[in-house]
Length: 116
Image 1 (spheres, rainbow, N blue to C red):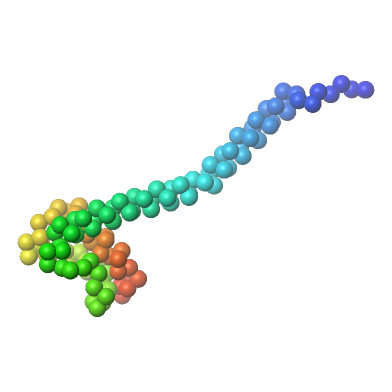
Image 2: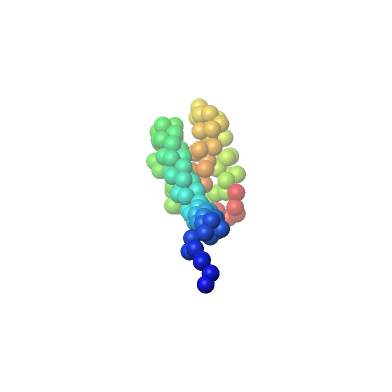
């Protein structure tokens, strides 16, 4: 009879490679959900920051960020609205303008006549 060892070095390396590949597959499968979670957290932080800017600079004249009586606007329309507000004395940076525009567009998304 042949003397067979159950755990040879060849079997050890094949098992090790299989385990490493399986872990790699699990990491790749889980990565999109981790990235999506981080994006959602990042978007929430941006929305909170945008709302604080809106509260500081816009709520003195405007009661709410969303008026259900008004028709929806495209992103370009919101750019125009914010630029008009600069003419009325709105003094904010370009970054703050973009935050407000993104927030207003996101709040009214799906109500616009065309995508912006």
